[in-house]
Image 1: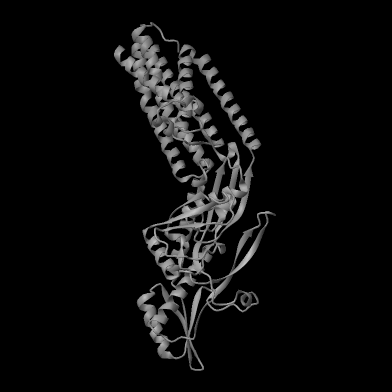
Image 2 (image 1 turned 120 degrees about the horizontal axis):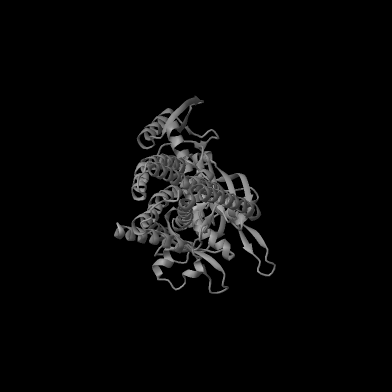
Length: 534
């Protein structure tokens, strides 16, 4: 038993040492091996939005726009297929109701189109047909299930894209969760530049490569005579002397030769001539092949690099470009270039995102919450400590010592697992303080009963821990199960409460049963005390 006490004491010492190590400030970790530097958190404990301040956003993903975009692309695809199959048609148009109307010169052409639709476009169905003055019209639309799938996929992709952007922005422990069918809640603790964060999250970041229409007059297009298959888009130019930006119109072909979906990475580089930042792009294997083919087929033509409908540059393709590298210039600031690289790496949003609700929690409110939470924990802890000392005498001191270790282990675990401490999390710690001594109360009462029955201190301690263990274990396990469900299904503050409660339950089981038993065993086995102050 003496040897066993030494082993158990070593385990307790090791656990406390690790907890204290994770709680030490990062400045004290200089000179440690690389493994520790890379795996230890830079901060001691991450604070949630309600404690350190930050931003709370409710976003709406315009899934209808994603559906419209899909139908637009499919309409263009159907048009190209009919041209390849030499099916005669007078026109194709997309209505605001999400359907496509195709006009044919006769019935034979319409029937040929319907066969193609059945063989190649199974997601569409014919909604209506009509005949007037010898002309045939077919109205087709996406099947209801396919339309719902597109909206759901757009929501999932938007959630993942926003999560990637926020993670790369460097925000500690953000909370990004879906709400309903088309909303996303974003909580960003410690944000210092709300405007930049909103711009980063809301940017669609649709990167497209298109050819300029150099066969038609830009001046005529600006007068309203826009040629079919082209559109007017604008870029910006920075005047270095005045620092002002001016808009430049371009006549651009509608057809997108390539999108940012083929990007492998995007990073910020510095231009040699003026020292200005720009974004260098590298395509994946398929993208490199496509870019090689596009540049080979369009030498001496201007290729516009379009981001969210804005032309950032339109260089002349001097020669075939192999290797899959390109760059976006545009007189960026360093922050603008960094944010652009982030959104390009994270991918484009499948649909526009609008901000429905915005709340900013100031650091003064966070500090006030921290102060009140700490005072509640301190006062509650002191009351528990006083009660245990008065009611259980020296045994109460043992329980109080275990309680202090319990709190150290809780905060050490929060730092080690990089968990976020929230205001409800502080409430969870206060609750755990009461639960920790509750186990000792059960044990001490059992020991009292055994001593009243005339048993020796050694036998009383043995029986007290043995008889109280199952009761303590059952109550803590049931509470732990509830805490795990709160963590799994809760969000925000509920999850913060569940984190500290879960860690606290495990820590209190360790300290209330394992640690206090070592102390009692030391006195009844090593010191051979004749009575127990309980």
